[in-house]
Length: 435
Image (cartoon, rainbow, N blue to C red; front, side):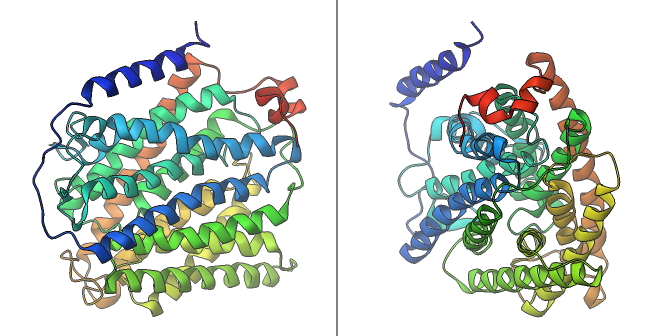
């Protein structure tokens, strides 16, 4: 019965989809859809999708050879599982009719109801709402995939599928609604998150820390990465796709998109070089792994700030975040916390640094849509303290919420593989495949 449950669920989805195929598709119409903006957002959506396979290579190259397929599949499967959830009710939870600023009505866009034609989303009024939904889908896809680096090499695949479904419903969707919906709690409070530093990276980072603590150490934590070349390839794909992630969040082919693209480029470059130089100052040899990790930390940190800060300040964000994340990695290695691929130090801490530094360097001259005010650097304190409060609240919600979901998942299906399965490798024990 348990083995047939996923098939039964898919069958139910198919039947419901057929039933609702005749539902009226009308919504508020907008004749001001811009073809240039639409073209850019189509490209951006494809770019963000590339990031998930890029992450698969990035993580896959870091683990042991016997766990490469499993680790890469954990990223890839999100493209399938999360897409189905998003189309059925996930988009509605994140962007549906508001419920007290914390979640959307799951019936609003059920099975993409009312998203075809020339309907638009209020905050991106020049592109079709179906395109906005697909763009946001790619963010939802990569977020749980980021968490997999923390519990790599020791989680049962079936249990992972359950956890990622719970995470997208109970952690990601509420954060996306609160941050990006016009009626969301954090949106109305004035929190600035241009492309997901809070929604994506902080949520994934804290969930990763919770996962590492809950699953405890691997049988043999020390290992040699299987393919550094895969890590380099993955970094290139992530950096490439991140231009859609950040510049696409401008909502069109405009000046703000160009600004976000520029700040994304410089922050990542500065962070990559800073990681290398910092390692050298510590007496280590400059490594490809270090450069790649540094580049990703810079991309993470600039994400919430990309459309709110100057290019000069993006350099500072990249440098400072790289040093702080490096120090947290050093601290983590001296503890018993087995965050396999340092997801929390890189994504969690990088996201928090980006959020705080947005509160420091945000400039209303860069983005007229920023009505909260300038950052601490310009002598204003309001935005910084709002971000500090939001950081604490999001951290607590993501960490403790994820810990609860891990416990629930474990009750449904044991999370951890057996010792024999771990020693054999997850490729063989979970998928009966090998390189």
